[in-house]
Amino acid sequence: MIDNPNNMTCEEFQAHMPELIGSGENAAAHPHVQNCALCRALLADLETIAEAARSLFPVEDPPEHLWEQIESAIKHEEPSRR
Amino acid sequence: MQTPEARSSRATESAAQAVEAPPPPDPVEVDSAPKGSEPQTAAAVAPPPAPPVPGSEADALARAQAGDHHAFAQLYSLHKRRIYSLCLRMVGNVAEAEDLTQEAFLQLHRKIATFRGDSAFSTWLHRLAINVVLMHLRKKGLSVISLDEAMEPTPEEGPGRSFGAPDLSLAGSIDRLALERAISDLPAGYRLIFVLHDIEGYEHNEIAAMLDCSIGNSKSQLHKARLKLRDAMRTMPRREGRR
Image (cartoon, rainbow over all chains, first blue to last red; front, side, top):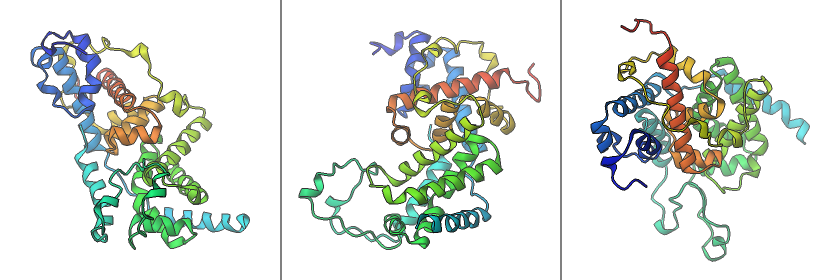
């Protein structure tokens, strides 16, 4: 644990980042980020990547024919399992 | 950093089940923790569980376990999007993703009777699908590691590697192709965590249950995945060029 977040070095802050971001806290409000352009840029980049992933890769439906294939494969398998 | 789209799509799936579910008669008996962590011995003192609500996932699951084909089709409908998307993002290829989705649901069909409810059904199904994907990647001879290896911390990538000039910031200029390429170049373990969290919108506690790792491990692996993507994106030539 870091005693005083205001006195964190970049190394200490970056070691703390996974937990800080993963806990859902507002990492941008962290005192170190307020005073450090490098870590602010790093945080902004990581947020940009996460947001890009959400917006560029929506969860997609498989094609309709896939269920027919699965159904057919199941029927093909079933007699051998009896 | 939770995906709003994923939240809403998952909320929709949950809502679809909740719509048909009347309020349970006794809220005390409702299993509010979807991880199913209740010990089996609790059944000795608790009254028998209420029968599944018709039309719910639990009902479809029970009927599919008894061999009801329509119920299995219902389970497919409920989970196909997430499983297909997981496969698609892991292999980056539609035809392979279809094959893997098919294989995952075929395995589900073979094994569904063995599901005992020790975890949430979706967690169990994802675990099964993840293993199908990893097996496929291994067969292809890619640099694939086992699930356990994927979740091993890699101390060589500790803090300090992220220092760099702020003028190399991504500044919101990510395009789909570049990110797709960077994701496909990630080691499988990192890719898996990134896909599950940042694309599919699962929480760390859910990912930890799927991958049988700690929540802290899930957080640190996701962070490393994003750092790797950042490095990759920063070194990629930009379409518009960097001044």
